[in-house]
Length: 183
Image (cartoon, rainbow, N blue to C red; front, side, top):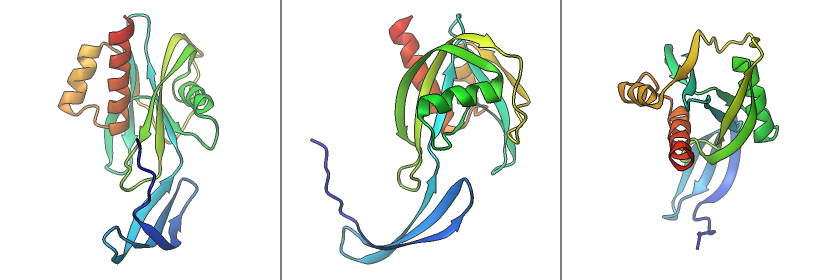
């Protein structure tokens, strides 16, 4: 049976910083040990990642520039929900970023991005039966390369750190589990 008690008591909350994408909140708390303290956390929009499989069960990955560490990285397509339903957000993000439209969608899983520090929840969708619009939205994410890779190559990319985004690795794992069950 899941626990429902809440061992931390919040005395007050204060937003220390905010912008259109996130808020940093500091809570004054009573800890489970009964001591007073502070707990800082990041409130951000929920997100979606899309595992795009073609008819050969190859996975579509994109290379984007990650501003925080100033590096180019391979990852699954995805993004923030902007408050809309996660299925709608997944379809929007996939088409905007890649020009891909999928006829078949399946929710593979939901989880927390970093539950000790962030409020963000993530959903991973599987997209199949693909068509291509040929148009991509110009964005600051700067996708400079994209393509389908077989799972052996994707595993190699994860192992070598070419794919190092935790959300993408979660999506890849869930896609591999789906393939093992369904192919």
